Length: 541
Image (cartoon, rainbow, N blue to C red; front, side, top):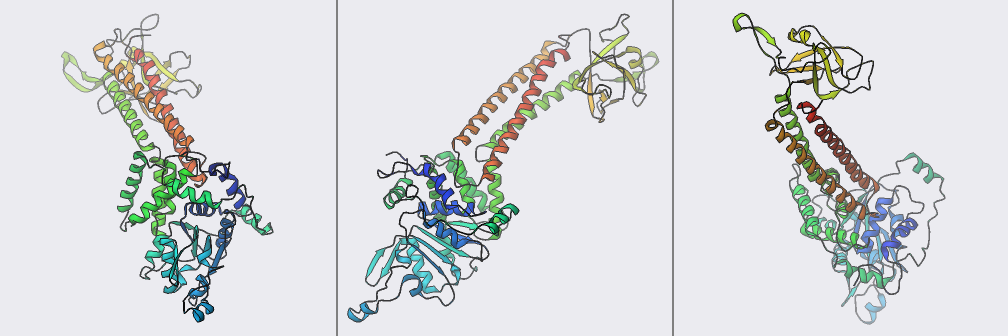
């Protein structure tokens, strides 16, 4: 059977209805999209939601809106207090049944046991009698009424509080059943705050039946969700997240096996309700709302999931590491070429060839330039902008007087150069590095190695490995760019995603864009080196 998420009674599959359904449910709500879409996903999956936040921020309104998603759904909501009784939640006792039959029966019509959508505010204030019965209802979707155990139709339980359960309150079992956990706050953005104040507060009372979920299709979906596949690649991402959580900080974020299983099922449901047969990496971002248990773990989990989105969702870290390997190899090659090509000073020799103080530049092999052959040329290992008068001129080769350069001493005066192709003369500062190789200092005082233009080209035995390395790096970069395009296409194929906020999608897209730009820059550098190497080796020019 196709996982198109529709029954014979409905022509439009849920993944096509979903955008309009969310838009209709969210009408007139401001900055509540996260809670609404997560609540809808939980409702469509038969899971529970816990809303954490201060009073007066539309928690109950969200529950009422979600009730509208279901055709003819019944809704029950209740504000818990320390004095709440089971009768107020599960229904009053039937006096007639007790008198006539001696049976302990509750009248459940209009109460939790007969509601599809349940909202319990200030959940932690309820007493043990209510909480124990509620735990059974969540676990087994059953309610024991007298001698009978009856199924309950509850599709969504939304609980809310302005606080978390106390660590030693004995509420851990119930809290663990609340799979989706959403932090809510007051409206923050100025424009949204103004719109909220200006609105009449009216809420839609009905949705178009064409958008609503029918009972038969809801039941069908619960079976079809189980058919969604968790691919090995996505499982590896889940396992990596689990390891990171187990080793996170001084207090690891403990997540039970039951919670992991239900959280992954929620990811399967997300894939299903988008018309996919497999869980996508993007679906795993929903785990940010399933795996925290207190404020500290929530903050740490959000940080971890932000890193996961930027670096691991679509193999970004592997791509970045491969790019770093290419750039490191290119830098190493540049260093090798600099060591071999840059003009290196020799110890100064005095009378009778004896060593004396200072250094001298060996210019005997220089190719003579100019009409009288008194000029020589030096290539910059990497082109640079050197002329204030011509800021756009990228200087590749300089020409100077051989005698002047031959008498230059380390720490001495600047030397007059003429960029080849320009009539402007430049007085530039030179220095010797720790290996006595000649460098030119650019306007930012960055050293640029200088390569003497010699009469004979560099032997091919030396230059051939450089050409081979550049070709190999170009091939690696081409493969890397292909893989990046493939991952971006995967990311695009998994969109739109209606249960994840846009900021997470933007973060992934920005990461792809940044990496693509860096790959373009590296490709340009490689192309420049491939074009420039014959010149530096004396094979042209």
